Image (cartoon, rainbow, N blue to C red; front, side):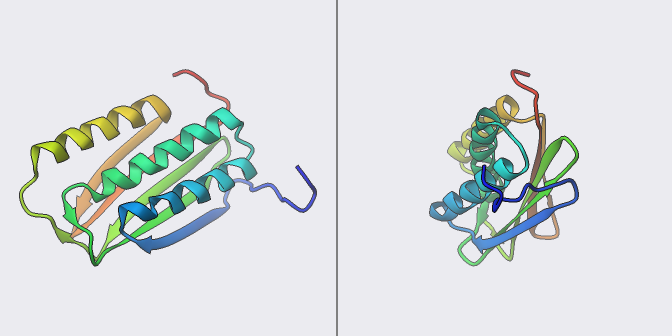
Length: 141
């Protein structure tokens, strides 16, 4: 790592907002990779976080018509972890949940169980928020 690439430290916070489209989730993954590398995560942890954030975004979009919505991703560097919140804003409810949406949400939750230390999802006042926390230096939970 060169001197020009400063490390991130506890208390640093990065926010990214983009249109709530599945094809743009790659942006969240790229930002997560860069932030976790600069926060001192090793390559295996970085890859876990990158995959987990993609699933977190997909889980946030479940059951909503996100055509007019935005996804807001907040990454917070903690002492020994990274916390990520993904919030769907300005989207309309998607109507009746389809069986394949339930299956997809269940799969996303199983993937998150395998990749991160903690995660959750909640809906309130028309917005959806999903979050995760991944500790540094903890392999194979």
